[in-house]
Image 1 (cartoon, chains in turn cyan, red):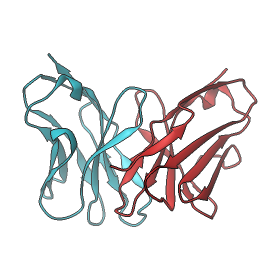
Image 2 (cartoon, helix red, strand yellow; image 1 turned 90 degrees about the horizontal axis):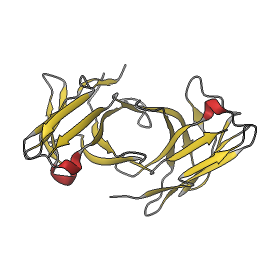
Image 3 (cartoon, each protein chain N blue to C red; image 1 turned 180 degrees about the vertical axis):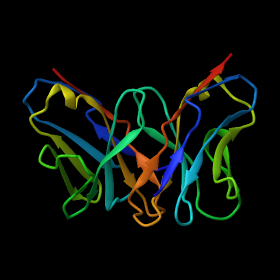
Length: 114
Length: 114
């Protein structure tokens, strides 16, 4: 079965510091991994995805994610956090056999303090 | 990135009435759209997959007669909550899948049933 886990409910970081939001996955085939961000009372915005190729994926708003096959992880990173990055972040994996189905993590609330 | 719109953004209705929510892909055609439900501080729960020109595929536990889905064109899917009750109050989010298998999400619809 496919699944993703976000072990941290909340991450606190000071503005200007690097941030990491963790995600681990479990899939039976090749992983198709995604990161989305959600602002209050809004839908999810696509940040980046990994399908194949370079393990370091660059996305929107300066975010990047590193795919690590041996650790089955896909952590989201940003070198310098902004207060405006404060939001809810979701990791997702696409089902290996049913391309229509995405499995979302429980979400991690990122708080960036000035 | 691709844009998906939802209408209305919020709706308040009386118990027993029906509510229709529209989901549109504005700059791409989507043969497949998805309807999710999100409870406060929780992740997204896939309700159903909407296929253009055919019946929707519902996830286990989702009542198809209560949540009617119509995908009449390549850019429009509708979700109708029939005979709404207070427990149907939630945040409903649609998404549309593009040709690269990336899902783009609408801004969501907040439904409150009195």
